Image (tube, rainbow, N blue to C red; front, top):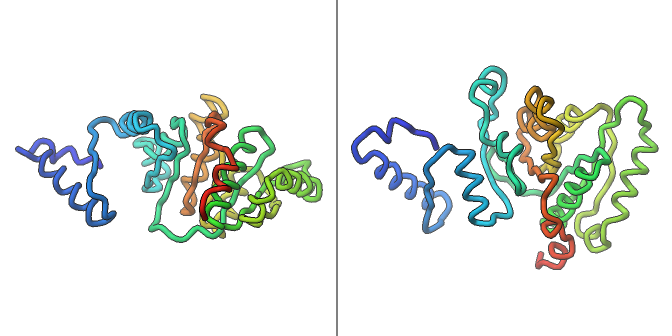
Length: 238
């Protein structure tokens, strides 16, 4: 939380810390809160590394246009820089009964799909593997490829999340934005496409999070394979 004025008031920082701790206790029931000073992105990345976190959860204001260009977004920066998965939320929490996993048939989207399957199985949520068909792609061939990906999932994972394949018209990220409103969670790769391209338009995850309210879980392309071990999720008590 950035409140620079409080730091200029005598004992303002200490008072702010007390208030934050109390609000956190009331809202979460947790007994303690660690407060870290510093630039938000750098501080969050440092804490995630120190704690060896498996997941970073952050809210977003959903800035767009000039506001986004001038001020940026900590959530979007985390999607680009975090070495661990990042969950971005904009609204109050709700039960997750359906998970959307976009697939563009690259190795990094395949990793994100495995992560989505593990999450859906653990939550007993319905998993949808989705691809936006662009020019030159046929729905029949694309659906067959998606169903082939689903067949590679372990049997217990498939039974837990009842996966299905869906093809819609249009390229990413527009196709994702059009369909994700019908789901409780979107899981996709946080893969970078190149410095200049990301600078101008942002990664697919960044573009999607700007325009949708559905919670989004971005999985970094270089996420450790151990974090994608499906058997660990499948064997967990559900």
